[in-house]
Image (cartoon, rainbow, N blue to C red; front, side, top):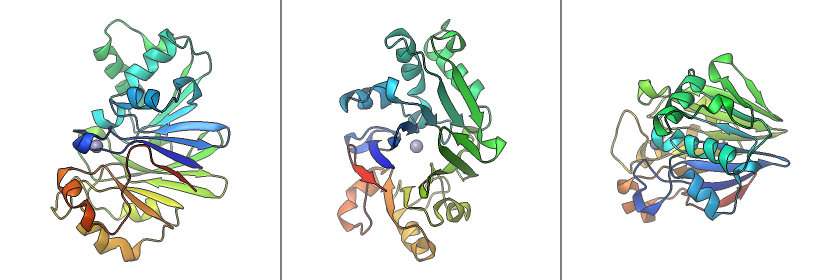
Length: 243
Ligand SMILES: [Zn+2]
């Protein structure tokens, strides 16, 4: 898999980074993990057409993780006249939440009547397939109203893991276990918060991780200020990692 970090920032684009969005290619299959509000512009800057995207995985219903969907869905219909189906996988209520968000952004536009078929699948159905991928999800600790999850995406023998947004929970061990790459949110440097992780906490639990590689994303102002003191790799917009 080839992971192109399109957006690695927090909700507030701290440091000028785009909101969360990873463009992943698994040979012929191409998908996004999360789609923050800045995603369409960021994809365009990297010359990635929405027509190239076969599926989208959403970790939770906060605007910096799914707020970009209305623009991408509308652009695919009105500008690209897309005809191939698009799969969206996410937490329970994914179809309802994405439809409602699109309706608020563009009242009267009915995404179910677009030029292409939208197919929704919920994490609650258990292990899911999306094209050639297997997607496993685990609940994490974040604002409960946003239905927060972390995910493991398997393609052949490779596993990409993503924490979503989360405070510390033992489920993060299930998410990162033996993964080839674990993208872990790290909003703070040493501040302890229930809904986000800190570098200090990640360093504390790191000896228990079995993933082959960890990279930190979703860096807030405190983390950015202390980046030079950080011994773990941090993501930045435009970074590409192959696993
Ligand atoms: Zn976030």
